[in-house]
Length: 359
Ligand SMILES: *[C@@H]1O[C@H](CO)[C@@H](O)[C@H](O)[C@H]1NC(C)=O
Ligand SMILES: *[C@@H]1O[C@H](CO)[C@@H](O)[C@H](O)[C@H]1NC(C)=O
Ligand SMILES: *[C@@H]1O[C@H](CO)[C@@H](O)[C@H](O)[C@H]1NC(C)=O
Image 1 (tube, rainbow, N blue to C red):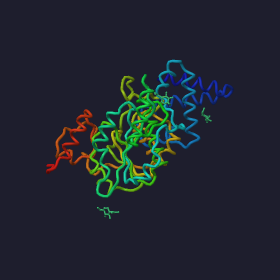
Image 2 (tube, rainbow, N blue to C red):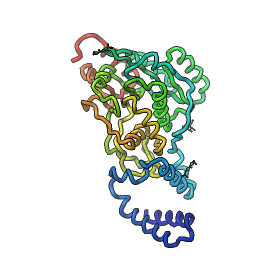
Image 3 (cartoon, helix red, strand yellow):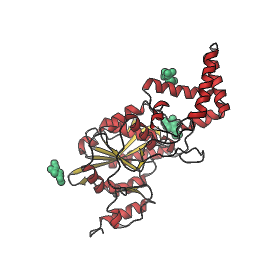
Image 4 (cartoon, protein in one colour):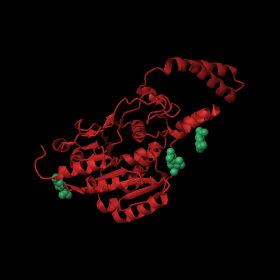
């Protein structure tokens, strides 16, 4: 650890200011000091402010260039390990399929946007036949849309042709021109926010909701009736989330991408709801923060930068990241839970609609 730091600092200092010996020595001591004392200290909010994540535009882009330079100066292998974690955002993505008038026409209270793989028509159909079909709660309109990237599989031409037909039939697809992959989910989320900012700014709320989630639309709308109208984001809030450093973990993040041991608070990706003033602010802030591929974490970083606190739902059981066992009474009281299969999603919905008391 210390050896590494020494090497790096000598390396950098030599190339940056060969003639300034005293500066080199000073830097060396400073870096050694940092290695000994600061790295092991537990993450705290005040540190987050000083370590480069939450700095103003100019400095933060310098910090990013600096870390890239540092890695390319080291071995080729470490460059390779960083590369898969590079997220191409911010970037100007375009829309391949769009519904520019959806919000104008439907004037929704809330827009539900479901990120889904282009080839996963089964999930879209399950949602269209269940919670996606609920267009009205009381006098509040609900609109549902799907967000897709470009298909990556061998059959992408066929898939794209099918998407055109599906889009003409249901008019609920938005597609952007990035490759649809797990590591590109942050791009998907950010394009959702860009789309909301551009085409849906008069709705009151929006929710990003995963395609394997069961949603009780009525309970969602009822919660929102008494929610704040501005600077509001809610869902299952993760606090003091530990950054995964095991390269085999699905959520592995190398230190070169994010060097703190803990994440700031963030709402889990299964479903988070927010007021429609936030997309513009989040899109702007995202230009200043180094993107991580874990989309919900990235929004947490942006919210922390904005200084906007996340709101816990009024009841801790409303959102569940683990599939809640089906029980009519229980499901009549939740808002969102992951499910084990599309079949479950459809069956639970049908059962909940059947007349008679819930509990
Ligand atoms: C960082 O790199 C980007 C892209 O290469 C460049 O546009 C920008 O000017 C650089 N910033 C600094 C501070 O060198
Ligand atoms: C919608 O419903 C609420 C309560 O159910 C009522 O107070 C409000 O006036 C209604 N708004 C419209 C436009 O009908
Ligand atoms: C993400 O999308 C961009 C833009 O299409 C592409 O260049 C990149 O390879 C994609 N990344 C992954 C991991 O699929």
